[in-house]
Amino acid sequence: MTQNYLLDIATWHERTTGFTGIPSVCSAHPFVIEAAMLHALRAQSPLLIEATCNQVNQDGGYTGMTPANFRAFVEQIAAKTGFPMADVILGGDHLGPNPWKAMSAEAAMDKAETMIRAYAKAGFTKLHLDTSMGCAGEPVALSDEVTAARAARLARAAEEAIAGTAGPLPVYIIGTEVPIPGGAMEEIEGLEPTKPEAAAETVRIHARAFEEAGAKDAFRRAVGVVVQPGVEFGNHNVIAYDRQKAKALSESLAGLPGLVFEAHSTDYQTRAALRELVADGFAILKVGPGLTFALREALYGLDQIAAFLFSGSRTATLMQVAEDVMVSDPDNWNKYYHGSGEEQHLQRHFSYSDRIRYYWPQPKIAAAVSSLLELFGDTTIPETMISQYLQRLYPLVRDGKVAPTATGLIIGAIDLVLEDYFEACKA
Image (cartoon, rainbow, N blue to C red):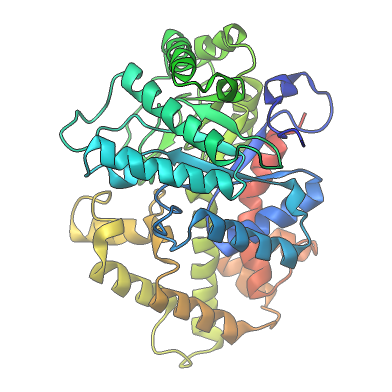
């Protein structure tokens, strides 16, 4: 049986070549995954792609995809880019009852069991167990003991689902000191890193729960703990990594053999901060909204270029279509964006939280994007307009590193973000 690539991640910090950490690309957008594959090909690196429980589940999630569908979707992009699927690590994020927490705990956990079985059967080999949220009639946050017992139940279900099958066994990520899937609900002012004793307690309680659940072998493949290193982003601000504040947490890894820390919400951190995170033991760097934020910037820049080059060819700009759809269907942003009508308008399009990412598959917006790209085709876009509307890409276009076409510029914009992550993870 092939060994899971991530099984020895706790030893990567000893490397003098290759990668000492790994970016986790948390997105279901085809442009993002394509850009990530192209970058990983150049970097000669495996690629970790993750789907969340809300995004992909047995009921379809907000993407409409089951775990098996998501795998097939990734396989199609891999075939297009020439990226070997053997080098793709598929991960499931926040796997637990969150999508069904309005139900009773038992009903929600039954659904979560079905979900994690589907993830395991579809060949997802990195599974983050997140059972910390209360269900109907329960407190919002549960005790460590209840959380761990439910996580162990899900691990056992995953192990049962793949018993006797070929392929690498999954590794597990435990711990939940992060905002709920989808991001923080309120503006973030500041964060304190996880206390070292809390991280150690999480591991201890989970180890016992897994043993009691008959999943001791699965816990031997627990490779990471989700903790809060003190990074996050709100709608308009980013909380930067402060390694001095996280020093005690980082040093506590020495007492957690075989484990690394997984950092969520690392979007919009600088390359220097990302490098410090990896050096300090946060070897798995999750990024999602930061990638689709770059995608949106590119699309909106192209939207403005098209308004000039192809004046009168569209009845509405992409931004206008997106605004109409988001206003008529506010469910994916109205709990996150606050303030006056003008402030909400700004946030719908330019928030770091990037709630617009939930709307790209919406038929009217998808059609507007397709129309925009069809207008450009393979047309060479004038460098001077790229300088005006997509300024970060202008030097790369001049140097011949990014093609001055619509799709080339979109991939290039996403790649600028990916570059920070891959460089930060290099030995």
